[in-house]
Image 1 (cartoon, protein in one colour):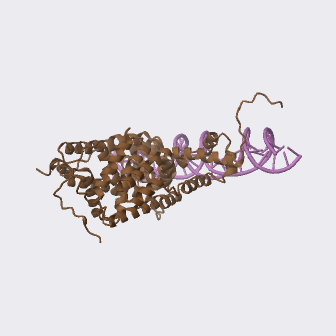
Image 2 (tube, chains in turn blue, cyan, green, yellow):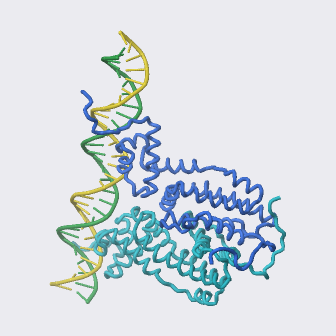
Length: 225
Length: 225
DNA sequence: GGCCTGTAAGTGAGTGCTCACTTACTTCGC
DNA sequence: GCGAAGTAAGTGAGCACTCACTTACAGGCC
């Protein structure tokens, strides 16, 4: 038969690996948006551009697909040693260290807001991989920063107090703004994000470090009449 | 037919109001635990101790029940002016004010951990009442604290900076620990909660207030070698 | 080139099950 | 004995998942 006008313009035929990748990408978006239970396989299949049967050629069940995604996230995000952070850490430059840390956390969530939602859903729904994420990502982050704080306390730069509390305080400051944005869509930092971030880190450092008598601190600190 | 042995010992017969209340209580627990989509009406009915039909005599649909619950939360939590907080506010006693505030937030979530989960689910699932909760609860809280911070800045007690940022910083510090507990089950504050809370508030105040000359720390400082 | 063929990619029309919700009936307290 | 509180047994819709089948393409052969 001669090729009459193709009514279906793009029925791409991909090899298994590519198709699998596309399914995972699409599923990440959908699951992050509507949750595991809120996403139907038909919906997912349509979004991918194939039929449901194709999904089941690549993943034995919906749950297996979900786990594959979470596993990938846990694995992908495993390690990303940042150079600037590393250098600030070695120098013991607290300001640079925490500024960079804040930036990294914020950047990460701005680039991939879906991941936080995905993890939140997983945690609420009690999926065991959320716990794994907690241990691999959050605890690891905590350990790293805790070690730094501990060292700086020993060096007399930071006030002596439970280092984990200090890390929690810092993380909370940053996390709060990320959280509000992702969960309620409220952008509390506003336009001049970096300036706000600097003030935030400054507040934190003033709060946790030992007093420095010579610092230019007059009653009126800066800006904004 | 004669009444053979009653296999069901306690088939309580309640009036409409009581039954309604029990349904709502049970639903709060279940929805908080497994989310709206994750909870079936059969499950809910069994937990209440009746059949599904009874639910539908009191609420026209599952969604209506959900909205009734969220509405109740929004209404219940509307106003709770705390006396200690009020007094600290009037005196301009920053330490007392923020300590009390921290305590209130933590207490609230410890007493009713279900509510936060409920709101989180609602927010993730995009329910409009989550937005309502945000406006009625969170923004109201923000406004109240923001006004206090602004006043204290004008009085020269606190550093001049965006008051909303200050509120966000404080809220984040507290919220982080609540969040970690509720979402990941991680109790980062440990046993001596109150002592940790005091340190947290102290860090916050050191960070945001103008320097007080009489508070000296000697420890020489560090800085880049 | 043109043609056959084995195989992997993809489809459409289901299957059984669980869900939210309903209907016809029974029981109890006043 | 009447009305409200409660039940048992559904109903159709939508879900995850399957099956019998078709299509596209690589590569060997002439």
